[in-house]
Amino acid sequence: MNPDEIKIVQPDGLLDSVKASEVRREIGECLETGVKVILLDLKDVTFIDSSGLGALVSALKTVRAAEGKMFVCSISDQVKILFELTSMNRVFKIFSDRREFEESMLSS
Image (cartoon, rainbow, N blue to C red; front, side, top):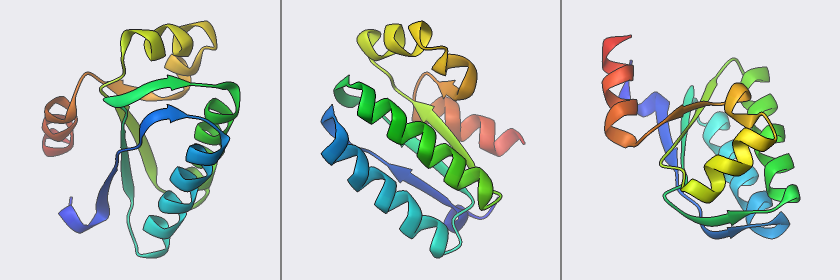
């Protein structure tokens, strides 16, 4: 896969409605420039509220509608628990870190 078709989006802090709308806008801009794979690196996200979670699902739908793929990596224990409680761990393909994602992309 062409590296230009992969974009890493890395929000930080609290992923609430404000931050989540910034992330959605960034993902939309990526798709407009021909990006096909988006990796959402959550290593610096401390907490995700319900609006943030909704925005992630909305972003995923947008990416899929554009025939792209979106993955998540580097989630904290707190975010992991939230993903498991809301079954988001079944919706998103989650990698432990960027290296695991990159290895997966190289092997596919």
